[in-house]
Length: 312
Image (cartoon, rainbow, N blue to C red; front, side, top):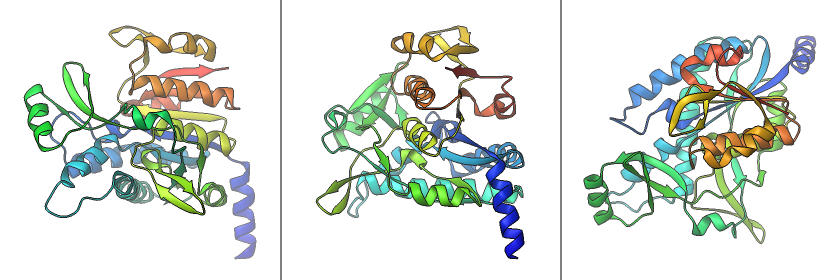
């Protein structure tokens, strides 16, 4: 048994680590009727493609939770005392991680997947706390928004003639469980950083939860750079990055990071812009290839036949 374990460690050490970030909207769209069955179906479809990769790569998988945590926030407004937002982050991180882990391990990957609920350090003085920008939950019509605001006052933005709740989204500064993640990667594929992680900050000698939602793409980039990954893939619900989000006629197939920096101002806040920015940061901090593509074309994206490719 000891010899088998040694050979497995050597084999895993030879594999390149690939980091894949699944968008929360890609698993469960904020538009239309939400359902557990729909999300589970998306997880199973994605799992088949990712599990096949485990023969060629060590896989670190992250996922968003913007739609899911917003839905939990709505469910949370019942007759019992509501949970704080950071704990709803933990709940959705565990539930989505459980769906992905069971779906992936059902496909009999070369190495099993395991989920680690991840806490991410933020600065409690981050200006994001006074400027909510992260969209969560479902889309509202104007009439639905007015009704919701009568129940509870909250910040919101307009997206394509619809409205959506926004919450603070501080930048991730560190990963509390990074040593555990790196240790697990020696033997397993890891699901971590779900929903950007549970935001925490240090208060004297204690960890305190922060009521915010960290952008999954920035947390994915931070983890990817810390573990030394050379390739990061962000899967979402769009095929490519478009030069202007209002004009889908010109997409970007491959570009240098400097070009992507120059068009950041043309990209949609809260959706595609942080994905591109995270890819730029990944390349600037040691990554070689960053990709953004559709979860529905996961095989083509992984084979670099679809999606936008960003390099140095």
